[in-house]
Amino acid sequence: MQVERVKYVIWAADMSRALRFYCDVLGATVARQSEVISEVELCGAIIGIHGGGEGKRTWTGLSFQVADVIEGAREVVSGGGQLTREPQTEGGEPPHLAMCIDPEGNEFMLTRKRG
Image (cartoon, rainbow, N blue to C red; front, side, top):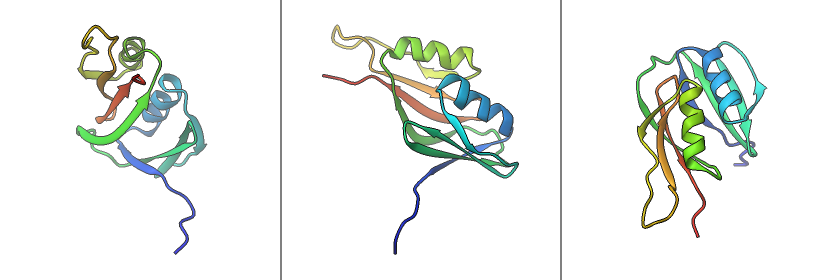
């Protein structure tokens, strides 16, 4: 078998809202758009956004590395997302983790490169 493409798919009850969040907050670009499934590209990765979601909270396993987790968390909230774990300092180091939820209920992490 030859795999042609890899993408991670998340759910959205409101496709337009989901696309706005991933583009405006995380800087993704729309690679494909339809009512049923759209795709955004972010740092060379493809995230498929499938319509018909119910807006229920779902852990995705997605992690986005950013330079400043505190600022990133602020942007998530101002873009319509939520935090389930605020960025916290650890051992005198700047925060390296924030647990987030997009407006569609998809949970993800913001992380900072360590060391």
